[in-house]
Image 1 (cartoon, rainbow, N blue to C red):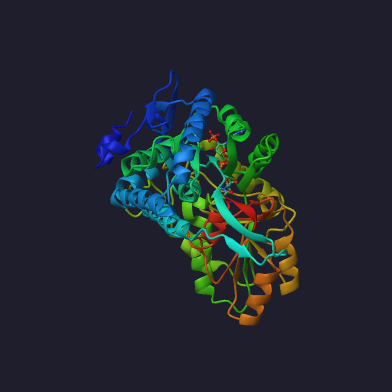
Image 2 (cartoon, rainbow, N blue to C red):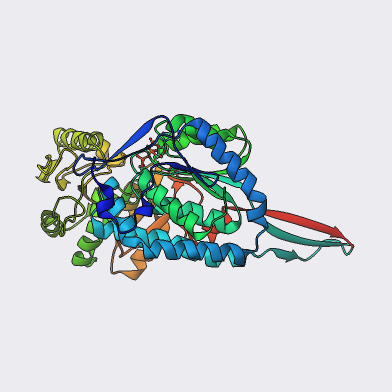
Length: 481
Ligand code: NAP
């Protein structure tokens, strides 16, 4: 096993037990956490169970009355301390993240800063949970609304952003006065537990935040989606698992937020600035080795792809902690095999392999940056989320055609448009059926704006005032006078 403490300045961040009701709890079984770049074992942590999840829900339920009665200012003060501790430990948190997830250190640092920004933003925003006074329909009555926290919130998060997908949920929930139980992905529990250690140090009261990591996702998930003490469930992950969890939530009619998969088109019009388009495309396609929900999936261009190919060829694959690495491994071997299978199938159906298409010597989870042209919409690769360092290029004739093709998907998370023509840019942004559209930009997510999808990409928003609203109920109050 690797000596993880040699990578950290603050060894208090290295937790190997679950955090339930203010206690660090062991378990008879162990969950092994590995480095996807080297295959080395990083840690063995307590393998949390459905019974642990039940205890975590009980702790969150017990903590809710006191936490929800605190003033917004009191909650904000604790959350700002949590934010500050994350900022103070950002290098350690980033190293831990790179080790268990694989992304290059510079990207991991970016994720830590991005994740922390949600805590800061929601700590500020919770002071503005205004209700309304409503002009009455009856002179003998006074009408108003107040906003109240929904109650216990349960969260299930994926491995691709092991820090930020947690703070995007936990920060607004806690700021609103809710208490939380988090199940991180089995591949990346160390980042979740480190966040919890800092929350404990910051003074979040016992039971307000709980983490149950474990290999029994289905068992833990059933508790988090079906326990009647849970008021709201929030999920980030794949669409098939999201659909299953929505069904489970139906049994107790829980409020739900779903951040699911995408199939983002990236449209480059003939009037685009090509250098800018290539930079934006690289940022959305190759970040986290293509493993983000807003990764470009289908690239529609008029122009040649020489410049894109040159930038892809300049990527440096390696361990995320090695200086100069710009492309890390995929999360596990079956992801590599899946991507390779998509490439082989596309080539068999007539796609042209411009570069890549093979495994890399750095380790079994590394895959070469790959560029396919001569694609068409019917190929599986154009319909499924790729989740790998694979850029897929198609050509198009005109604006109407490319909009129709871009919208021809059951997903609706993110879309990208590159054009210097302001009239066209406005038309296309409005016509694209996606929850988020970036025009002449490749990286757009921020704590201050609503992130989320339509169609089978999800329900609800994270970030911005909309992200805060997800954790309140609006109560209508009618007073006779
Ligand atoms: P996943 O397989 O759906 O897993 C996500 C989480 O769900 C993990 O914690 C996983 O636990 C858990 N899970 C799996 N099966 C479950 C079950 N039957 N019951 C309860 N929990 C279960 O997705 P992933 O492969 O980790 O993540 C990639 C997906 O997330 C992509 O589709 C991506 O687009 C999406 N994503 C969306 C957003 C967004 O904001 N829209 C952001 C990031 C990622 P285990 O790890 O223990 O299996």
